[in-house]
Image (cartoon, rainbow, N blue to C red):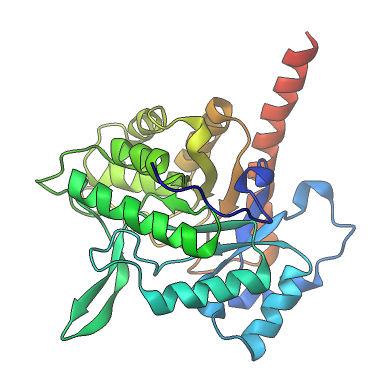
Length: 309
């Protein structure tokens, strides 16, 4: 069992039922111009930023993030902790992330179940991508140690996201769900379940019914371990081509169906709309978030009715 973590100002459970969007550069002005009397159905509870873009302690990016944090709760989503890296978590990266956390006090902190760091010629080298892991006991122990070290340094609980992949390893001895559940239980981290990634993987690994396969995956994850859902879309392809997880479209209909199932099974969770390429207008992005809020509200209303019966 991992050591207990330091106390924190925020607990991911406080964001239950919150709906947010990924904040990208073209939307800064629109996000900061939102008024406080925005319609409750289209309000944004939090915004997610990629932590690496804001490591500078000063300058324009720091000033913008400060202004954003005064208007919205923040989620810091990292892509370079390298929690599954045999080389370990990069010290310089961890130090920069810790400094950013101290400046912004985010409500959520997350990264991925992947490796990104290695050593070459005496130097730490970053892969530039989220590389999938073999789900083995050796890699599980390595990742438990890395997550524990990161959480001890940051004094925060990390949410670990399942990644999209384009191949399957022969030496895998655990299923992805077994790996992630044991990781969470042993390190005390939470899980960020990316529903779009489940559908992408189900398609790419030739599931007959990707939506049903994704639902079966979800059924193997205890609700108490889930801290957030990610929703996204992808560019359509013709079978048998691989789907690339490019976050370039509105949330797919299959992803909405999977999300509704996930909320009715697990209850309201923090939910983020990811859209990184071919960006829509800010209003279109907010409208996607409103769809998620309606699904959460329907679940909460049903719970209230059940409670009063």
